[in-house]
Image 1 (tube, one colour):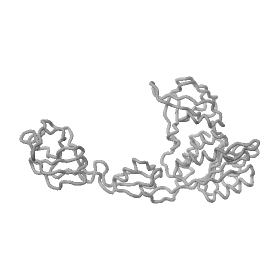
Image 2: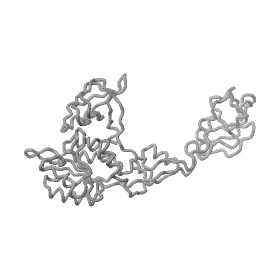
Image 3: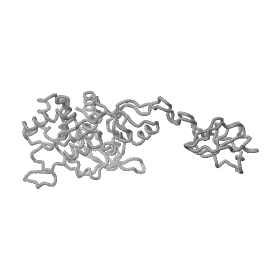
Image 4: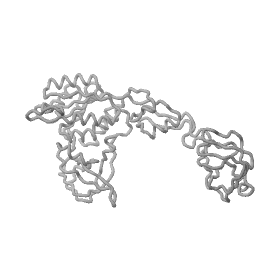
Length: 403
């Protein structure tokens, strides 16, 4: 199955979590909105000055260049002048302050020709702008401030706060359990036995999940034992909305994850036309969605970023969770055997001719070290062969994948 088809199947299969909760806007960063939010007030709620200067009536501009205008007060932000401006009058006004009734023009302070006592004369000019922000200039009462499926970020939180909104409804955090599998795995810090390696996949997945609004449950490691795998998946699926495993999804005699998903529930698909990460299982056990990621460290990370993360984000309420892509030119040749679409680790940078990208060394699926210099994945179409320098490729930046 191609990646695009697999994501389509996932989005069709997985509903947005129905549970919601109300949170303070100040605590909402990273959460997905469960409902549209409309402005309860106009912003600004009064005509406001966009500049420091003098509030006048436009019909008095010619008079301001002759005998001048009489200054009758001052309007500061938070301290308005509440009178009504009469012909021949002006007030000193500051940015953000309320423009009084009778005024429809701000003359900038740098246009003052003479300011003596209560008389103000201005240089001869016809201002091109009024510098008056009308009521509702930013947002009108009842206007949409945020939409269902938006992810709260600092700018959105600021917009909500400016409309006087202190609390919003968000999709509840799904509970995501993470397993790793394999008798060969040992926790970092412990001595290695013969034929053993350190378990990096579980740590990587748990930390990658930190970019999503989920509750992560570290479920430890599963041995290469069919009954133990079955018991663990059965118990965990009753307690979690999502399970993510690494390893045990290939065709070896000790690979039990795929068969266990099928035995306990439904296996939606297994194996993608993808490199790294061909053996990837997705299914359901009861109401719990299960992602069986491949065991090679790079394959685990790539399939999590391209498949599991968009699907979990969709469950969290994201309106659009497909990783963004942009074009870049290869700064050096890239090797690829036609067949599966491949996602190579690369590094892009700005150059005179635009963005350029190059691979970061050996692309073997066990080499986590190739991520050290990488800041993106380079998407190589399945039918493509080796690509020469200068070829245009699609690049998926990590700054979107990891946040």
